[in-house]
Length: 217
Image (tube, rainbow, N blue to C red; front, side):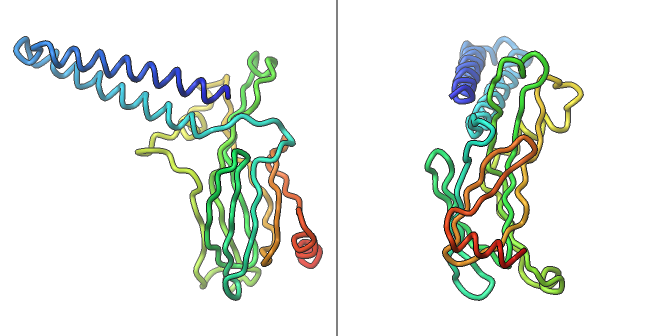
């Protein structure tokens, strides 16, 4: 909820900036001079940029450490080729086709630091990437690989990336990856992914998944 409210506030700012830009452009400013025209266009571009930031923030959700973020279910299509159904904590479903024997899920996590950390604000997370790999090293280097982005930032405006690359300037926030270890894909296997202090935890939700992990070990 917090990050949805933050996104709404940013959207309101973007709308106000865009409205101001349109006013500058509309009121005969082209007759007043090139400078005001350029200022209006820059203001409009700024409004669009702020709107893109709002959208990117909206794609993140609040969650407690230990709380499930998603489940993933596998159904075999053919040998070493699986249909993967991801159901996120908010009920959104996405399907991907993975080649290989194992799967891995990455998430993007934004945590508050310093004083804000003492306020117990929940970290923000977003499902990022799903990938598959082969047990066999030769196949891993020669066969078709599977690597999918689950959520994409619009027009390349990536809030997480901006924070991650400018960490020393944005000390109130920390942007990191949460990564689950590679686990076996098996037709009928169902797993649950939850957030931990160090990344992601995965546990089997049915006997098929539990048996696949035991055989893999």
